Amino acid sequence: MSDAKSRIDELVKSKDVVLFMKGTKMMPQCGFSSRVAGVLNYMGVDYTDVNVLEDADIRQGIKDYSDWPTIPQLYVKGEFVGGCDIVTEMTLSGELDTLFDGNGVDYSKEAADKIREANG
Image (tube, rainbow, N blue to C red; front, side):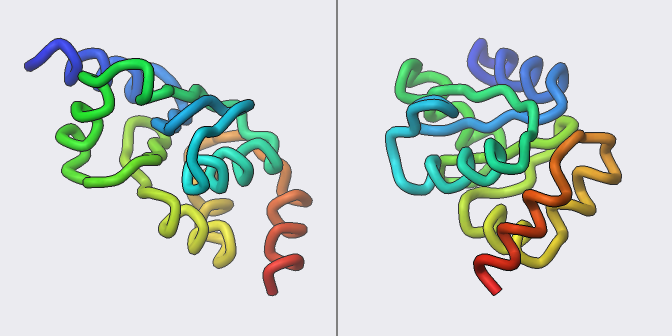
């Protein structure tokens, strides 16, 4: 296992929610990363952000790890959830709530409902 892959593996398995993104949760550096971080921030999810722009090995390594070509990438309890479009769809359908509930991830149900109301 490469160094980047082992670092990624350890991170996604040791943290409940991890977002590999361009930039940080407080300062996203691309629109797609901003959208996913914005959803998680608004819903009050405690998550670890990994800025792939700071480490080229991680930036490529996460794509290889998930076999998914784009960033951002969201992981919950060690499982790959998806990128921006999937997270957006899951948020609007309520599937993200179900995923968080099933994995014991704290979030604001009220905030999730407000996102759906605003986009309904």
